[in-house]
Amino acid sequence: MELLQYALDNLGLLGTRTLEHISLVGVAVGIATLTGVPIGIAITRNERVARAVLYLASIIVTIPSVALFGVMIPILSLIGQGIGYLPAVIAVLLYSQLPIIRNTYTAIHNVDPALREAARGIGMSHGQRLRMVEIPLAVPVIMAGVRTAVVLNIGVMAIAAYIGAGGLGTFISRGISQSDPRQLILGAVAVSLLAIVADYALLALQKRMTPKGMSVSAATA
Amino acid sequence: MIRLDNLTKVFDTPDGAVVAADHISMEVPRGEICVLLGPSGCGKTTTLKMINRIVRATSGKVFLDGEDTSGLNTETLRRNIGYVIQQIGLFPNMTIEENITAVPRLLGWDKARYKARARELMDMIAMDAEAFLKRYPSELSGGQQQRIGVARALAADPPVMLMDEPFGAIDPINRAVIQDEFLKMQAQLNKTIMFVSHDIDEAIKMGDRIAIFRQGKLVQYSVPDELLSAPRNAFVESFLGEDRALKRLNLVRVREVVSGELGTVNPGDTLATARERIDAHGYRDAIVMVDDHRRPIGVISRDTASSRQGYCRDHTRGLPAIVQLDDDLRKVASLMFAHDTTWLPCVDETGRLCGQITQRDMTHHLGSRYRSHRREPTANGEQPRGD
Image (cartoon, rainbow over all chains, first blue to last red; front, side, top):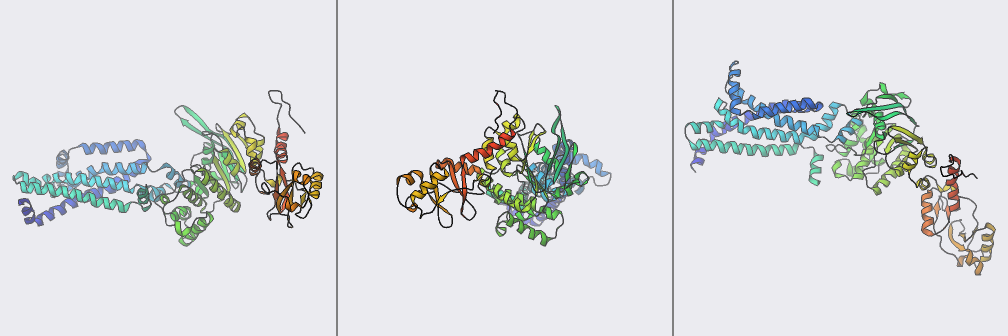
């Protein structure tokens, strides 16, 4: 009850922090999608490069976020951006690469060889095949990768409050430093809810972006 | 016309080089279907796929209508060759209309033209344009999907088509139907077609010519009748099967075997007349009775004619069966077995009696090919039989 009252009293702040959080994750995953999808498509042409890229992306994910922030402080301090918005976005951008690249690569790689042969056989160039057949078929799996990245990084972004990036993590960090369970719990619950809502919203988007013929087959299969 | 000149494919494998197709040279005349036939791994599919460069030839050349294709851009070449594969490969993200207009769209046709073409194609494959054009491949049955696959290959009206076991994944009943439809279409379209199959019966049915492959080599290339009557070696013989003479029944029409002379009686003739004619023609068991339009309506048996009195109309038995001039001998043989008879009356397109076909005529017709092709005396000392 007390928590609810606190939340109501600080509704404005909660809204601002939520928007901050969404914009941080949104910008970072947005950029990650713009880089990850082309990388994922490009590496389907060479298996050795693909293995190397996916390995590197996996390693990045194993770095604890606190450590990653720590590493970036001295480096980004050189351009006066050691803490705050930029390192937070870069960290999430890096963490997002793996699910997005991997899903894109897997989806394109797993397009039915018969479809690929049919597309080649009727005279589609490599680019036409990607645009007309392979990418449309890969969209659901690519979107699933984006979803994973968003949900994962809504959690990671909560920690970015410690380097002054703002967002819902601020409630948690203040709650801890001020020994205020209301702020701590409000932050934690808000982060969880945001992750759940984002997951459902992106799932709906994923379904809308799935080519119609494929959702028909899913429905009848 | 398709001409292959020493087409060769060597695959490099960890176990060394494998020759998948070894200096294949052959020519398919314009408007004919050539079936590439052989066991799996014999090189027939590799040969087919070298024509549209799905597989790159190691050496050799492909000529289409006399033009060396090696100078052509790969995409241009493929857009001018219809391609149908066993897995069909319809794009699941596209509607039926988008699928069958894929090549025209790649060729940059304007919208009105390719939309009209889509309808034309649906008519050609006997599918309802209204009902299907806006649907997706996953909503169609296998047979319908393969018809669409054929329509997609025909969309830009390419002179040449390559078909890789196109009807292999369809159940036997639908397969026969689609084969018949395809042959009917081909009679109108006159495409030059290479068709890969591993099914000898399909090859005999579809092929104007059959090319038998084994271990990367072209073993025999002939018209079906010659292939069946004169297999070049033991491999071809065993691949065609012990019953290859029976398979030839499919290839021969009644028209080629029918004997025109056939004595008949009318309903108004007496049985005595019937008896006389049976004797005059030397028939062993019966004579056909025809109406005023020479349509067969029954038979008078020899026993009846010799033991009873009266008019033919009162003593007829039903006809066992009637065959048409365009029926194949396989159907005739089947009818003979079913009705325990050695002859059948034959009618023309208007239903008029035009002759009879006997078991003897059939064996003689088929046998004459063997007699003319018979090779050296066989190992067990049997002598070639001549007439």
